[in-house]
Image (cartoon, rainbow over all chains, first blue to last red; front, side, top):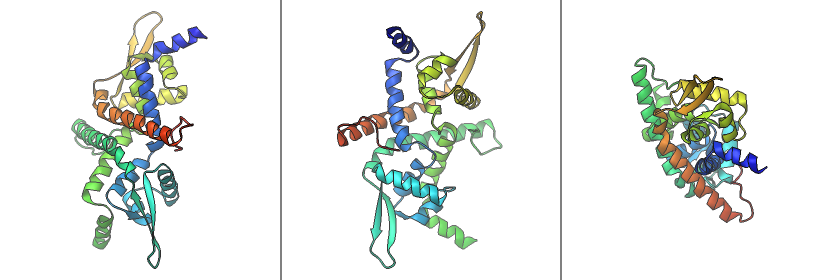
Length: 131
Length: 131
């Protein structure tokens, strides 16, 4: 058993393992195709469900509904019921979602630079490289 | 048609749209469950396929193989064939993958903080909140 553990350590330094763990933790909560996009859209201001669906292009109502529930449960989004007639429901970001600022900034900045690089490489196309 | 465009702008400011676009660009290339994890594992040093699979816990050989092809195509990873006997193949990160440093740092830092928050909230469990 001891030998096996040593063998494993060879392939991955403790620093690398710690980094992978913290990345895992982050991606576990905010990974996937939509969560960060929804948060960015709501940073722009509280929105009703339909407004949000129109901002986050390509998301279906069913997926948006599920993602909002997850985001609410994890403390990123607040659902607010306005006692107007008819009752309106809006979604807004919480204070905690602002802890993601550095992540969003880093991703956006990198996206801009990557697009510039791809544009330079293929001066014709404007779409980033295939996933 | 013009009316429709104006209506859309109402829901999403130009700054928000630009941010969503650059985030889209980033997630298009480095989104998904595995790519950043593979890059972090290789930042730790060049690895053979099996070493890499042991470091990135939970990835299947088929998925790892596909992800490596994508990462190679997008210029993040280099495949190196060593002319030893038997021939060994290793994977390493490219210079370009280091442009992701800020993204990886921001995600790791956030993951650490989020885990601390969750731990504080549920002093028993050590797993971050459900996705």
